Length: 314
Image (cartoon, rainbow, N blue to C red; front, side, top):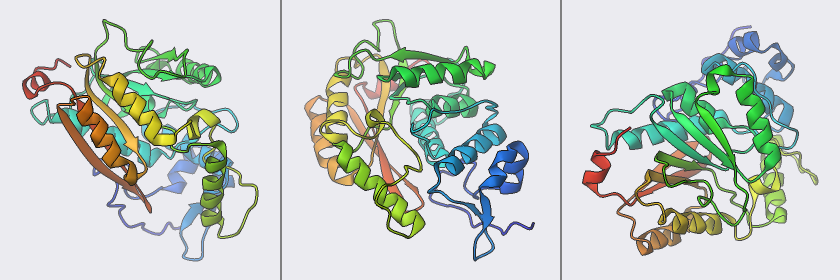
């Protein structure tokens, strides 16, 4: 079967391996299960049904095997199945951010340590960060089942064992407390916060996504990317979570070079900037990201002066 050439996805980061879409024939060779979900559309493009959670998970498995040398990866049913191109973009933008304080050179290797807040059961940011740049990670979550699945992923991929450590956040009230210890130093934190403020809002959003994908009305949506309550919503939604994160970050000003978080809702930015100024963040950066029709952005902040940033030891 001849694959139609797919135009470059210029909204993705220039180093993103997925800028030219998916080579399904190569992916199927690495993971034959994917062939059950690939079909040819009316424009003679090979695609999968992104409204089918099993198809999305099979695609992720194929991408992790082919592009990131992860041989064994799985998540429990109904847990968040992340879109890998967008997650890879976040990692690449973090790399560029670190380069700004490292003579425009991306720091690589195990001495670059990141803190992943809310890693979920998929462990995707540490996997990508380690595979692409050989970074080390501490990955945290409040969900014990998610942490147990991450342990399983690490144990089945020996190259991750010495690079990723896991920590259960025992109190859902806190983000960094109990996690950042006095001796810790992190080059960055990374987070994809829950952005809905209730289970009902999360369900309605999922229904809209599936309706858009299937172009038909559905009353009870199957989450194509899944997601548990703690992954999709929290009291007060995205802005409440990020507000808590910012206030807590101010208690660890010298232990983290760059605090970062995804911000899905553009209307939350003015409040976020206001709170960052209130806690006296020294430098604040906003990095735009886009994947398909979805737009998002990373907000990054530091409490270190310019000279302290330059003197940070990776």
